[in-house]
Length: 276
Image (cartoon, rainbow, N blue to C red; front, side):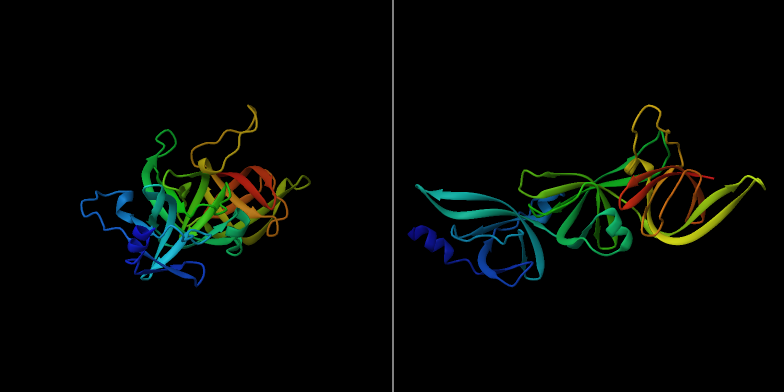
C-alpha cells in the first residue's frame, strides 16, 4: 500500500466529469512521439489510484479537451493493485443521437460525446461512380445508440447501421456519412380523375431525409420491387405527410421523384423513389 500511496502522490492532473462538475486527480502517460498515423494518435493512457471510480458515462475533460474512457487495466505489486490504467480516446464534440423522426424534426434524442473515425471511401461500381465515406463513430461504453439511427456531430450526419464494443472498451457505431440529408422536400399527393383522364395534385412543403437507397432499403420477398440506378430513399414523418402511396411524388433538390413503394415505419414513411 505504501507504494500505491507513493505513486498517487504524483497525481496532479485535474480531470472533470464531462457531464458534471465532479473532479479527481490522475496522471497522463507520456505521449509516444513515434506513433504512426492511426487510432494511436488520438489515444492516451490515464493512470489513477486504484480506489478511484470513473464517471458513469465514461467521459472526462482535461485542460479543455474531452476524452472518452475505455477499459480498466490493473498494475500489481505483489498481490495488490497499485495503479489502474484506462485507454482514452479524444472526442470531437457533443453529438446528437436521434431516431429518423427526431432527426427530421431537428429536436429530441439524447446527447453524448463522440469521435468519428474515417474507415474508407467506397464506390459501388455496379450502381454508379458516386463515392461515399464509411466511419466508425466512437462513443463511451453504455451509450444508447439506436440501429438504425442518425448521429449528428459538427454539422455532419452519420447513419448508424450497427454497433459493437471495441477491444479497448469503447462503443463503436458502424456508420455511413450522409451529405446534407435533411432538407426541404415538396411532397405531392396525386389522385387520378377518370372522367377527365387527368391527375389532381396537392403539393406541400415538408422537412425530410433523403439518402442513397442502399442505406435504408427493404426486400420483403422475391416479388419486391427491385431498386435501380438513380433511385433514392426519402423519409418523411406521418405528422407532416399523413399518407403516401405509389405514384405520389417528391421534389428533392429540384429533381422530381415518383414513389415506387412506401413502407410504414411508424412514426415515419420510408419511401423508395425513382426519378421521373
